[in-house]
Length: 249
Image 1 (spheres, rainbow, N blue to C red):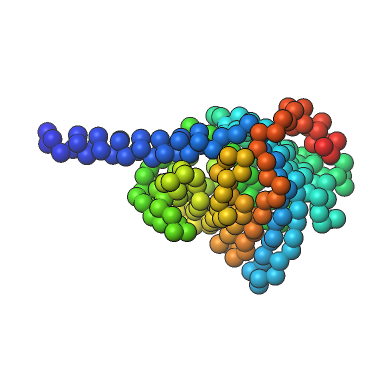
Image 2 (cartoon, rainbow, N blue to C red; image 1 turned 120 degrees about the vertical axis):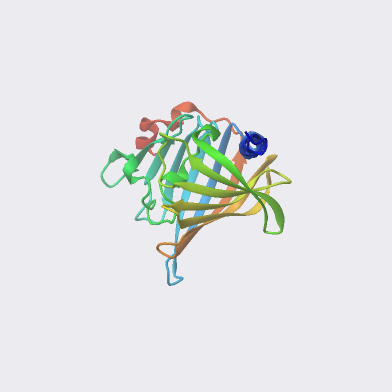
């Protein structure tokens, strides 16, 4: 047997481990017990015209074991609409939508997670946080994004893990180990791009204060600007329940 083949297999295994370790370090370095912000969403249609929405967001816990609640505060036609997300370390999240006009909540089915979230270019799945163990990783090389050296890594869902994307390519800054860009693919076709801009430290946590999601299929984009961002504020678990979703907290 050739000695070259075992060496190539060993090198490929080490390369995969390196990619996973980079993602693990990134998640570990930027963990926080909680997060809160007020978001301004500017939604641009293919003609360049835009509409504006605002929401309040809060999260308790972190990757794989977090709960999040976002609630629209304007414009009037979506005010009060809310989404509760309960993330899990080993499977897709549970999600419930609150519709104030109907005064009822609705569970968001897995098959609906690929649809646009209330007219934005983010899908329901894009709002989840996923633990590192739900994907496999491959280091594709190094590239520059916004003048910063980055690792380029491919992420694919592990067998049995649910996702609309068959692969995602992400760029993680080498200096601060922070993800700054994503490309999402469906059946080999690039369908969405997410860019993290205005990267700075807030409460000691590296953060992006401007996220831009581009939907290449509809040729639209949504810019999410974060205001009043804070981390590690004391939040209560009971603020992330179906009862809280219905009460409008």
